[in-house]
Amino acid sequence: FKEWSSIDDWIHLGIRQILIETHGVPSPRGTPNQRWYKKPMDVSEYYNKFSNRGYALYSKDIVNELVLELSFIKFDDDFWKGYTPKE
Image (cartoon, rainbow, N blue to C red; front, side, top):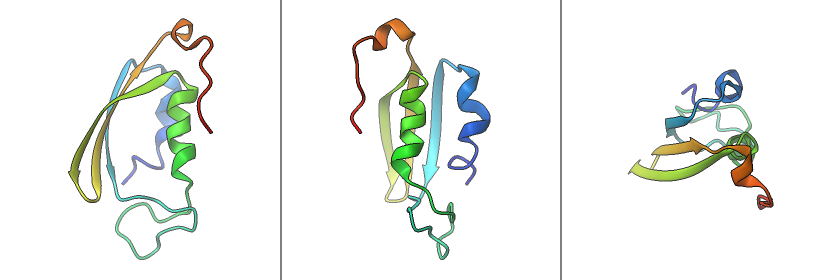
C-alpha cells in the first residue's frame, strides 16, 4: 500500500497526469489493526501535496468501500493565478 507513503518520491517529477488507486483511509492516530497504511497520517496533507504542486483532481471512481481510483492532471502555474486552496 505504497500509494500513501511514496508520494514524496514522485510528486516533484512534474508528471502531467496521474492515476492512483488508494486502499483504505489512513488516520492521524494510525491504523495498526488494518491491512493498509498503518502509520499516523493526516489525509488532507496528502491531498494538499497534489494541489501545492499544481494538480487538480478531475475524476474519482469508487471501486468499493475501501478502494478509490483518483485521477489528477497538472496545470501550468498561470492556471492557478488568483486561486487560494481551502484549508
